[in-house]
Image (cartoon, rainbow, N blue to C red; front, side, top):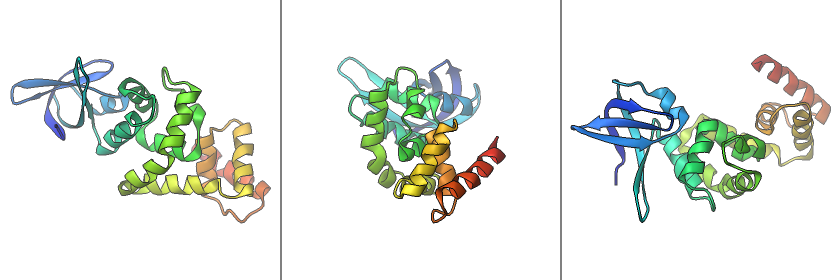
Length: 202
């Protein structure tokens, strides 16, 4: 129904933002990522999704089309409602979520409030393929997610990811580092090069 709303921000709280458009204030539920991007009294555009229930109409708004796309993907997962989708997007930015899904990083997703391992596993299972095709227009992040997914296609790179996670790195961090290294190298060399890459990011 609404593609986007543009207007002055007249109100924010912990989980919503209100935009005044043509004298009407539209309150949009949103993530903390979007809340960081908006300021009261500043003009902004939110990309929106209207969720229709029997007893309510809930409007959700996001500062980027990319985040909105992830919200739609998440609420399409069995057992994931708008509240859980917002919790996930508040914990993980869209690019980090794309990498977590590609890397099968359950722990990263369970850091979201109220999201347990079963839901996180379902998000990864149901979105791994959908996310690749739906988000192919988002350039660099999409290609990174593709690279990360390929890491699990060979034994030496998979072993390198496992070793790095045992050293305390998240599965997403480990898989992304491994995707930047020559996969034909022996596992121990892959690990050494990844540790150098990861140490530079600290």
